[in-house]
Image (cartoon, rainbow, N blue to C red; front, side, top):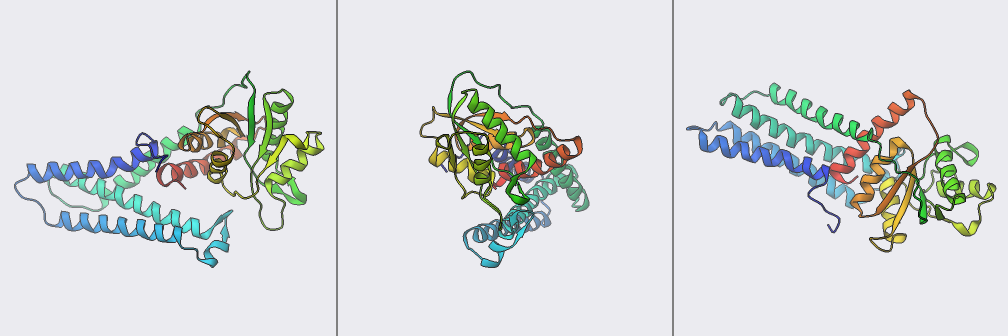
Length: 302
């Protein structure tokens, strides 16, 4: 709760729909001579459904189910996917409640279900498009002139024979460049591992050692498996004061989400992107993925 902020984009989205829905009910209730009895029944049912979905997500996030924890789909364990799905359904239910009530006040008491459904889809589309456009913002910083203690390399995929993927290699190379230019004093490598592979951080460490970077300047952690966990680890173990800054090294499609997570944890950060360039098709695929990842972080902290 110490990191909670009302002005965060996700919190503003979360607050907008229930607050407006309450205002709509209040306006309609006090302006109408009669109030359609079906409206409160439907409204309470939707509120109850959203509440149940949130409670189920909370329980599932706290209780470890071995099968769910060990099952991995698209590099995410099934437990996290189910929690995210429940929270997304709760958000859709709340948005539907908002559009249902808004349709009710505009239609002068005629209750329909298809119009709110279409409005719900439209509202969700607007949110997704806004998030996608946000990922396109260029928030990369120029290389600072003053020296920074740590340059943090965010983990990425490790390929066969324990080779960093081209995207990961680009991040490591950028860290090496900043180190050799005396922009950073130390290189901090993050990332755990998939079964049968070296951890991302260890793969990056071996890569840097081959490039003649001193082992005394390389620090690693191999316990994290997501960007949120990596930034949280940095907050707890690297950044000792609010004035201390770190350089976060990643790619342009990934940077905005990383900076949003760093802002949430109140980390003073500078975002630097690697020099690795990907084609338009791959860039679009990554940005679509980042759009939904950023939206999940904004709305639910996942």
